[in-house]
Length: 459
Image (cartoon, rainbow, N blue to C red; front, side, top):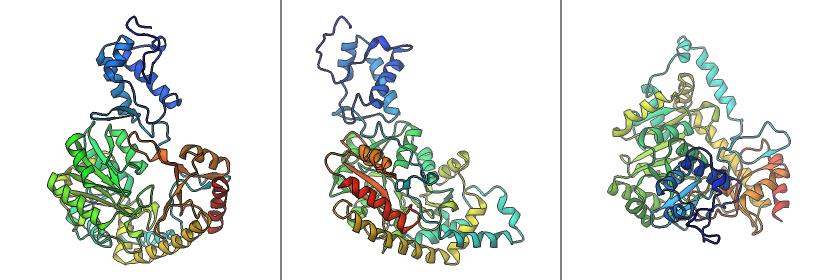
């Protein structure tokens, strides 16, 4: 025990210096990480002020600062100006969501995977492409930034969402997650802060952590980001960008109002704020709502993918990019080797040009409607309201559960779901809730069986 400390010093964390090996800051960071992941330090715990901890441990302030910074870069800590440093609400949660369909003993309702029925049409179009005289060219290197045909097909795809843009502002990518990763890598620096809703898609969390970018929960009211929250984050937290999922938000399945979309577009223009709009679920809405990008095309990166509405195997996404970011994004996609395959891009373009995607989207919606009717019936009283074409649902839990504990119990009952801790941003206590996939179970019967197992746990 350091000479200038005493036994009952009121600190929330008192690391044992006797276990420290190697450089003090790295060893201290390792102790902090171990205590967080073991559960000794709970999510939302406020850590001691750096100066007080340095005094207690008889270490330099810089040693404490470096240790906190290391853990912050790993997403374990959340710091807010004037409020201190807290253990992140998702610090002990597994961020990677993988589909466990190969495990026949588990009903997969965690990962969101569309049904395979539409793949027959994709197969037919691919076989048609293979019969073309220039088919061998489809296995060559693709053009950086996509061909004119691919980009124009992307513009036609976005037009289905009510967003009129042109091929010159479209960049194809190999799937929505790759598109998002490239945007973060190309347009942000290590240490930058990007605002999100307090609960957000795990894919942006893992990509941000990879680049050392910090996600910042923006204040909300009635489940929607507020203008006051955005302006506060800009003025007080040095927020550099904003990431939102307006359509069937992941994980809550909320749909952002038109008023909030227009507000975000207006503030983005006034403050020169870059908005990343993830429109992956837009075309699943009964009547797709106008994207934010339509109101502020020079301030918004708009990402739309064919995975949830057509086929995940196509690995095709289209990104609307303002002129000033175009070259940087194309370079990032090329450098990170996540440019789209010429074969998949050509098949996707053909499906869009021929109108085949419209039939496939309609079929996808019909299937999800029928599934959601089953969800609403079996989990009545627990599942949060959502549109009938929502591919995911948010289930609120009884008080004695946490999202993580229910996730464990559900898996023991043979159902995979994901607790709210996985989606939480910042240091607030995660909601007692889980997200379930409506689309992943291979049949209505399997879906109903999984829901009934969850209902038994909830009851």
